[in-house]
Length: 257
Image (tube, rainbow, N blue to C red; front, top):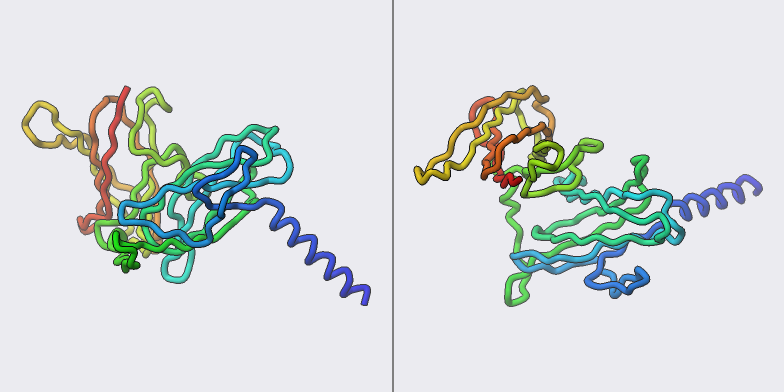
């Protein structure tokens, strides 16, 4: 009986630890960090919808930054989808950030602290509806050949992108960026070929090849990343190919002063 009581107390203890912090997805919140009408399901139009992601710590934070990760269900398992840093004040008991969902699916949202410890998690179902309010079937075409998820970001933490962006300043980290590619299925190639092009603004309506690089990877990997360095402003296009020359993904980046 004593053993059962101890086991019961341990279950309660771990449950308390797991739910000490709460994540809420909402369209609005109070000045005290209380989510109004939290969402478990979200309906979006084809052009997407932005919501707030709020974490309530109940006690004051003991750090200045949290990492929000968003994973998406693919083939029965959650795989990395997006991420961002959330700056906080130590005296605050809650923090909030915004995110725009554009794809239907089931997502897991979770926060890591600076020690890479998961402190809160929440699942969210996103449904796509057309203008008439009828649910639209998502063909998931962005993950077919040539459409792997391509993200530019500040850094990679635990093999996941942090602080995604679409514009880079040369004054930020000396023009350095990371490119993260998630194919959601094995890349089936032992190398990737990266081509960096720059838009020619002389009116010739063509792009200039800046450089080409090859990176060694494992064919079984679903995702990979590499570093990029820019020393001139301009509009760039980065293409990633497998060893047979088939396009895996491409993305554009605007580099400014």
